[in-house]
Length: 434
Ligand SMILES: Nc1ncnc2c1ncn2[C@@H]1O[C@H](COP(=O)(O)OP(=O)(O)O)[C@@H](O)[C@H]1O
Ligand SMILES: [Mg+2]
Image (tube, rainbow, N blue to C red; front, side, top):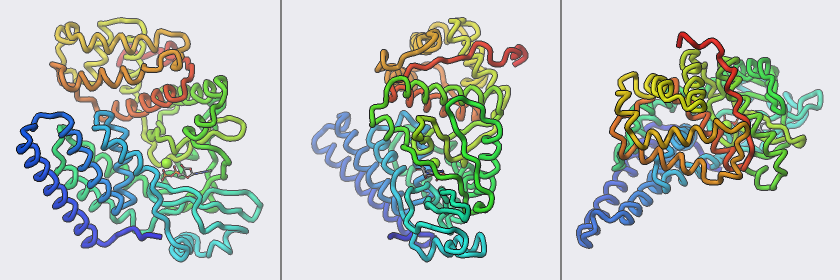
C-alpha cells in the first residue's frame, strides 16, 4: 500500500522533477520537429501532447488525493482538452491509493474515540471503493445495518493549497491554449469545502429531505458514524451507472434512470435551490430495483435564482426558436451583456448551435439512441466556436456549474441511448423580471 505524500519538500521535489522532465521533453520534440522540418505537422503536436499528458499525470498520480480530484474537475470542465489529456484524467478518477489498517484505525479513533471493533459489530479494513479524498469501507452497525463508511486521508485537508500551487506550476509548463488561471482558485475552494464531511453530511440531509423525484434515491446519512473526517450512509448493493449500462439493461429501465436524472436537474434549479454539481459517473449507482441512487454531496452548490431562471429561459427560447430571447439570455449568461446582437444573428456557427439545441428541446421526448451523434455534434460545434468565433464567450461562474451538470447529464443520456422528456415549459412561470 502506498503512502499519500504530505511533506512539502517531498512534494516540491516531485514538481521540480516533473517540470524538468517536461522541459526536456518539449526541447527534444522541438529539435526533432526542426530536424524533420515538420513543425506545423499536426500528428507531431498530437504526439507531443500525448507524452506531456503522461508525464503530468504520473506526477499527479504521485501526489494523489487533491491532485486527482482537481484533475477530475478539470476533465469535467474541459471537453476541449486534447484526447490524450482526457484519457489520463479519466484514469485518474479511478486510481485507489489505499491506507493501511493502522492508519484507518487511527482516523476512526481520533474521530469517535473508539476503535472500529468497538464502534461496529463488523468492519472491513479493506476498502471496497476509492473516494477522491479518502476511501470507503463496509461496516455493520450494532443494529445489523450495513454501512458505507467514507474515511478521509489524514493530512489531505492541510495539503490542498500546496497541491493546487503544484498543479498550477505543472499546468503552466504545458504549451496549450487552455488557460486554467480562473479555474484553479475555484477548484481550490471546492476542495477545501469537500474535506469538510460535516458540511457534506448537512447537504446530504437537506437533499434527503427535499428530494421527491420518482425512481431516485438519496441516502439518509448516519449521524452516529459521521464526523468532520468520516461520513457514513446505508450501504447500497448497486452498480455504477456505466457498469450497469454494460449489463445491457432494457430500454425502459434506461429511460427511467435517465428521466430521474433529468428531473433531478430541473427540480434542483427551479425548486431545491441547490445543485448536486459533480456529475461524475462514480456518483451514481443503480440499485437492484433499477432505481438511481445519487451519492456524494461533497460538491453541492447553492443555485443562484436569477442565473437559474435565465438558464431555463434560454432553454425555453431555444425550444421556441425565439431568436431575440435567445440572444438576450445568451448575452446575459455567456457574454457578460457585452455581445453585439447583430454580430450574433449573423454568426453561422451560433445559428448552427441554436438549431442543435432546438432539435433536443423541441421533441416531446428526445430519443438519444435515434441520434447517436447528437452530443458529438454539440462538442464539435463548441470546439469550432472556440476556434473560429468572432465573439468572445465568457460564461459567468454561476452558469458554469449549471452547464457542467446539464451537459454532464446529457452525455450520460447519450451513452445510455435513453429517451428523455425535457419538461421545461412550466418552470419559473414568473421570470419576467430576470
Ligand atoms: N452508500 C454507498 N453504498 C455503496 N457504495 C458507496 C456508497 N457510498 C459511496 N460508495 C462508493 O464509494 C465511491 C466513492 O464515494 P463518494 O462519496 O463518491 O466519494 P468522493 O466524495 O470522494 O467522490 C462511490 O463511487 C461508490 O462506489
Ligand atoms: Mg464521488
